Image (cartoon, rainbow, N blue to C red; front, side, top):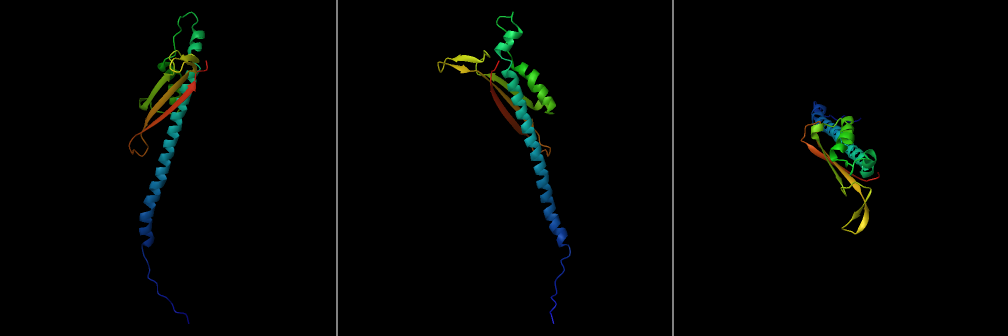
Length: 158
């Protein structure tokens, strides 16, 4: 004859365990979703920086000279031109909030020519344009703001 073992019934154990585990699992899932949004926003900021640098790299001294041959010297591309023609349209397409967006455009040599004489090294150097985009992102969970920054450097090609 087998002995029957009496077991105590654990009423409510599942409810208590679920009350502990479900909020943690829910928090992890929501955290992953918000982190995914952050990665997406960072990729958009990087894309805006690349587009701004690309536009500025093909709108240097020679482009301005061909566009305005009668003007001596030709007007150079300004940082505001890069913002108006490349950064702003790309940021609008990415749904980036304009007041949260900052930008900086600098050229290695202000002449914006593809090559320039570097007096420091005593040699000819390739001119580059550097576009830095900063974006103040407030996560969807309202956990405080994060500043996303991306810098793109491209050689002047035109």
